[in-house]
Image (cartoon, rainbow over all chains, first blue to last red; front, side):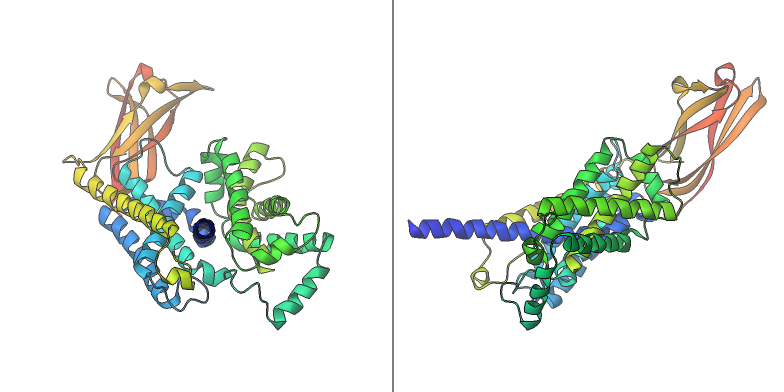
Length: 297
Length: 136
């Protein structure tokens, strides 16, 4: 009976670990790959790619993943992966799915679109996403060893106790704003933002907003990046995961509005539907940046 | 993906096997689709770019006639800067002409557009033709 209970616990732990691994990989992929999803040259390159080039893109993504996983490991602190071929294949598959989902969100697939165009679009954007998946844990670290903090971390945790309530909220909002600027500053002035805003159907925009919120939550609270545990322990009325995610998304939207205004993409007196569409479109990379920013503090 | 623990060192867990299996299916399906698309591509001989005027969808707005069209590239390689010429003729006499530039047209791709004319196309003959294009 005890053995069976322990076995079930182990299985549950395995699935939880696997879910965290997948979420971490997806988050890293979006973090690195999103700016290129918003680049029309990659759409052109993908739409015009021959079959051999599509296979070459996928092959390069697999090979770079494999090399990275062999020499640097798939996770922080890993000297090298024990099963590099399987890990690289999984990273490539996640990249293909992530690329497809991202392109569908920004309405780059159409009914009746030729198969070679769809495959080309997915393959081109899968490359940077695959790199993001490989390096995700090395960029933001993993939640390993957080249960036994070193001297420096203990001091840091003592300081954290002072950061609660409104101070914690301001710190989070500032970090989210800075992160949002960091990731979407180079996207805001491009033609892609108004172009996507006009191409994406009205019903697609709330979908992007929901996806931004879900991804933001996953990066900070579910993927197990370094900083997750600390964020879950921080106290205050706005420090609950769902509330903090919502506040962070609103901050990312404010950052988007500010950037679009600065670059003249939106103006006072412009139709609110145009403004809304552009803000939501830029809000996706901004919210990813905001999540990464909050993990960094 | 495998967690680096003593337990995991013994082999993949069920969860990891499932992830690996799904990954293999995803990559195999993608690569397989690319091969199948390449093998079954039906590429016609001759000039692969055609333009079709959708006369039944013409709309009149504020004195102008909005004529939708579709330009298709049935070839196996993409083309750039496709220049289209629309000529409205009546008994051989040119009433109006308009040019449209399509920046990019993927292989087996179709782009839609609209040409705006001041003369009612129903009263004359509208001829659309591909003038030139570039191969990237």
